Length: 374
Ligand code: XIL
Image (cartoon, rainbow, N blue to C red; front, side, top):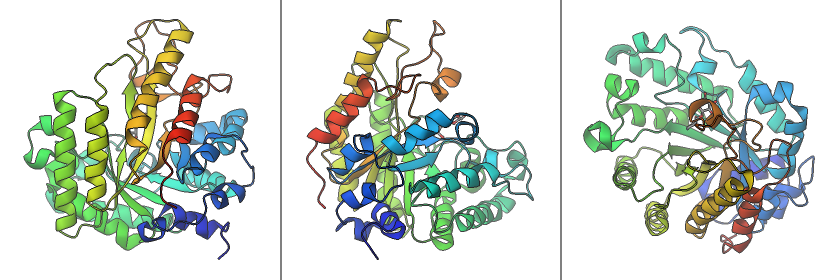
């Protein structure tokens, strides 16, 4: 297997045993159809890390300029929503892989490893799921779905976000688990089932628990960090095949409570369990900031830099993905809009696809972090 073959690249991003003695990262970038001489992935690979972003079928179909920038900046991609139940399962007896396959084909065409997101979540589910999710039927439904989906993408996905946002202590459930439709039907067993089913359907991809809201000094975030650690330790003790933690990192500029010490400690604690970590959905919303783009861009960049400086030194942190590459499109404008109606400036490229201060903050953070062991 040559150091630059697609299989080598997949393995580099997947199997933990191989990651520990990964081949030179240069091989990851140099084998790509478009060689990004100065892109963020290139900067990240110098320290044995990756950089990537979320893409969706709409961009693929309608924004060639945006999609052309993806291989220049990225070494890995994730589907924003095309792999979720809501996209894949129009009816209980049907799978619709068109959008997800289009993204997988794009990724393969450009030599970009692909993350799968996600197999178990309390949001973006089809309307029929609520009724079907009974204690009796839920187990079969979940197992069959994961077998079908992870089986469909077998050999094409390097990471699976097996479970997304499973922890939320304020819900008051045992173990700090979220009060989700899955949890109501199956209890904590939903997580066990999902990780086992994924490992059986495709053992190669690195299997993640992907979690939000752990960054700040706020009580809810502190409790969540503790509950995530306890959950991971408990899953491992019971032989559940979780291998990595995704830290979403939907950040908010202007918040002064970024807890760098707690974050660094949290990463070390996760690593001490033998798990890998990735920053999976980084973006920085600017709702608290004034309209002036220069002020927003500077604060967004400084906030992301402070976050990255806390987490990148941990050798378990494999890399960073942003939740979109350009301010042309971000979910934040739909779900957490600014009060003044201006578009958010949350991502590394502006709406004209030019590099912003956030791009430079990412590049500088990758360059100044100590290299991960090769
Ligand atoms: C978001 C997508 O970006 C939106 O387009 C969609 O409407 C809702 O989901 N955390 C996650 C992602 O894990 O799946 C979410 O993505 C953003 C928050």
